[in-house]
Image (tube, rainbow, N blue to C red; front, side, top):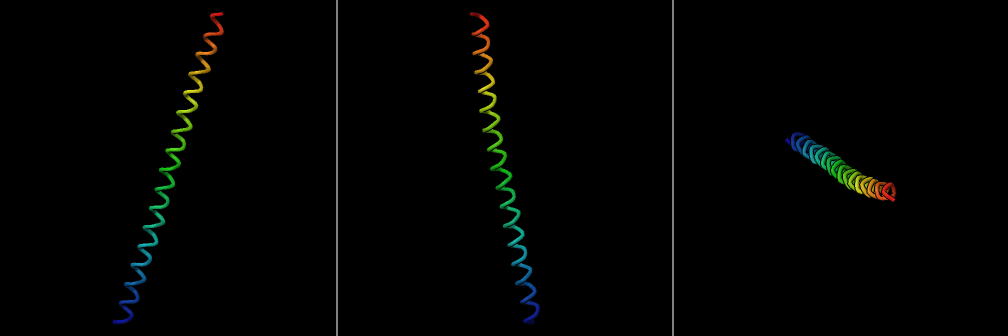
Length: 60
């Protein structure tokens, strides 16, 4: 009986550790996506500004 409780306890601990590792991995992926989206948005804004400046210079 004691061995069964020890085995069940170990299984629960392993499941919790695997779940936490998976959760941290997903959180890291989400943060990376948000960072990439912000960087892409910033680059698009810069490209639009550069195009407007270039177009204005061509009119002069």
